Image 1 (cartoon, rainbow, N blue to C red):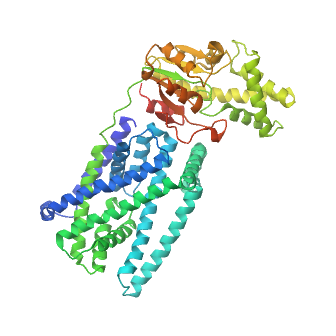
Image 2 (cartoon, rainbow, N blue to C red):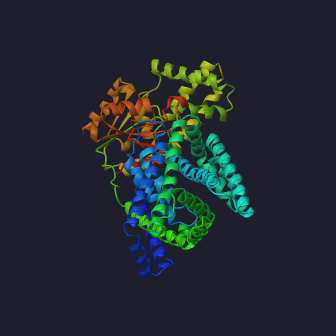
Image 3 (cartoon, rainbow, N blue to C red):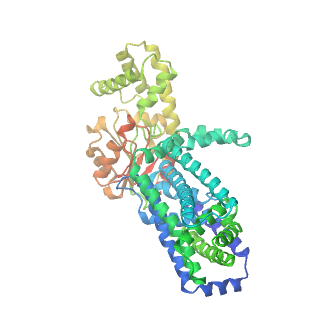
Length: 561
């Protein structure tokens, strides 16, 4: 995350702390007397949250890992982001307005914005889902321990239980099918949100669908990760009852841990009805008093427990806000940069077969997708064996010749060539314009070399798109006689930079052709994860990549210059 954004979150957190201190519902001398009364138990109340946040972080980490053993972000970072994220959420009206964007922005440089967003959404879902299950389990626990002594209490428990069961069903449906796109569509039905929501949906459609796919995958294909995450989060919910237990032990020995579970469950249920209030000010105090009285304890115990809990929360908000400025060392600037071309700089991370197929559809070429794929493979092999691409050919010339070979294979008339070639050329120009803005940030600061499988006309293509001046050298397969995925072509790129491989960062969209061989020779790697030739060919986890991006504009946030 950029320092400016982090400082903005920090200022917001500090402002919230000042506001809470100024509106604390008690004289500070009286507050200090109550804390002094707690004695050593007060440190137990503070300390138990070290363990609670640890299980929160484990739950989120299980989602990020998704059942894989390797991730590019250490657990301590997730632990820190968990504490800071919750601190921002506690201080935010309506909740989830500060902590979640903060977590996404901090996590994106490590695993990419799409995966960071989906992991945060999944964790929020798990956090809420665990609350619902905790409340439901507490109703069962209450009915097992206490008798229902009034019709009103029985009705409340019955209605609440039915609602919670429906919410469990709703969340399980969301986990199976994904719920991000559905939620956006629901929001688009609201009159004053319709225009902005639809614009957001159209601009982010691909990413939103990918997030829904990742949500469904976690539940459907990685059940162990799903249930591990749920277990850790449910444990953290249960451990919050230890705070109530420690506080009430200050006041009376006549309290059991089961009572504390019920107090925490029903108090949190009550206070969440008032989620629009920062730290649920007022709602939690009332909830504590009502629930404690309902369990035949003094209502004053509930007020005192709420007070100490509020102080604990304020302390952890201060800790969380302070942690925002700790451990944020940026990656060391690259000594040199190796960049792939095809798919990375000219296609937005997409495989060119997909873009050409779009051109076929726009030109209404009468061919099935299966036949097109055969023609695409034939064209690639034919051009590799017949050197018809001249060094002077630009990208449009290349596409004309490539599409002509495909049309000959398909026995289709040549009048389809020009519209398909123009579509591809316009697409590449749009993407290279975006790439040029990013490369301009590195120009003169980091030496750059291109490493690409191409046809011998890379100089002409780059010159036509205005990218040639950004590269010190070009290592092109048709010229050097070595093709990816051989590590040798990446090694030649390192030699062209004339610096050690461990100081070089390699960027590419093909995991097997770019990331693995560059990693093998000792380079740091950034995987531009996008649409491959085949969805199944791209690994779900890029364990050999030091970072993952989903748009070329994300590169500066990942790699300082």
